[in-house]
Amino acid sequence: MKRALISVSDKTGIIDFAKGLVEQGVEIISTGGTKKALEQADIPTISIEEITDFPEMMDGRVKTLHPKIHGGLLGRRDVDEHMEAMELHKIHPIDFVCVNLYPFKETILKDNLSQAEAIENIDIGGPSMLRSGAKNYEFVTVIVDPADYSLILNELSEKGETTLLTRQKLAAKVFRHTAAYDALIAGYLTDLVGETHPETLTLTYDLKQTLRYGENSHQQATFYQDALPVSFSVAQAKQLHGKELSYNNIKDADAAIRISREFSQPAVVAVKHMNPCGIGIASTIYEAYQYTYAADPVSIFGGVLVLNREVDLQTAEKMHKLFLEIIIAPSFSKEAFDLLATKKNLRLLTLDFAKKDQAVLDEKTSVLGGLLIQNQDTIEEIAENWQVVTKRKPTEEELAALDFAWKAVKHVKSNAIVLSNNHQTLGIGAGQMNRVGSVQIAIEQAGEKVNEAVLASDAFFPMSDSVEYAAKHGIKAIVQPGGSIKDQESIDMADKYDIAMIFTDVRHFRH
Image 1 (tube, rainbow, N blue to C red):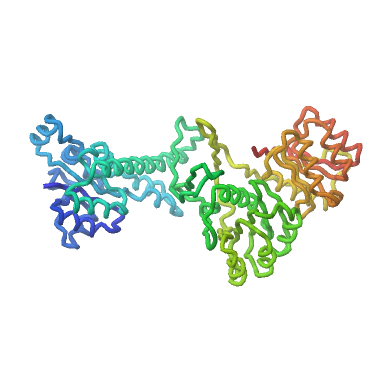
Image 2: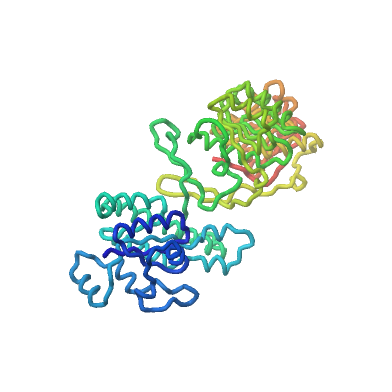
């Protein structure tokens, strides 16, 4: 008679599955809470102790780690020596293993978690049984996901056994599952001891969605989210309306969400191709949107918007006039949502902005053959600590504008230049191969408003040409990191044109 070993923490569907196995003539071995649940449903079970002739001990830590369990899982039915050993030692083959693991992930997501509780929720016996059964998939069916119960019962009903292909697929799922489980444990313990550069990096992600295509229609793409969810992220945003997000939508939304973190006052961020095309702040979200739109009314077309306050009807009426890809906000008033939702393709998403300051230590960038990991660029900067390096000091109004421009420029692709006043970007130069080229683009975009603008540069000026170009076009205040061997030339040029210039001593490259 075939046997199934069932021990699950997630008991979803387990009663019906076990009944289905019994109807196919399968004996059930079980333990602990699972055994109790099955017996309450009048499903006959055999206890682990009956199989091993050995008591459960050490608070349940030792119960399935026994030759009569693993021999039943690992023994090859097509090898005479294996079968003789099983007969000699009275080891009965186990044909099905249905195991869910201790909820380690759910445990470490708890608030006020104790280290002891986390460690106690590291499953040892479960992964061992699953891996033993999965290694022997030619003969053993391993089940870790309740979604597969019906597949197995259908095959047993139709064919009397599971197919080899099904067993192979389930074995692969098991090893993915245990690898992800171990990766979470490794990550938890690595963080616990403060190891920052482990000799191997174990990461795990969960499938969020399969995308229609990638950056281009001929590229396949899939969206995976961190196994330990990051609350303030596009992965955790709730879509209320519109088409499915695309690969490029997700990238742009991520960029806009990152920028919105910089501002506590009502703010609106517009992003196009992962660069901001407009940022506005004000006392109301409606006024902030007006500033953002006015910053670049051309580039905002087809863009992604993030608003850090509820979208009201007045603001929605203005946005409704545009073609936009995505609007993300903490919430939408009913009237605003009803209006915006008349555009069937416009994606409307909500996000918990109360979690915007949640610590996210690392960001990852894939390269051919590898992965780059760095701390996020979330350094806290205080304007009072900046150094004025020119003869003229910035006015209070200029200082507020420089602070705003500095927050914006760190999110623009390098070489990055931002022109702004104290509430609105006026010109953005992004991604140029030389810095003066970015200055020229930003000034051209600002147009007549350049006379009210200050300038921020994400990295130092390698020579004085950018300062001179900015000065000749009306810029009166500049903020930059400093650090060039030719800093003095830039300072001298600023003094020549009576420009106030500040060094922050912090660079914000964004490649």
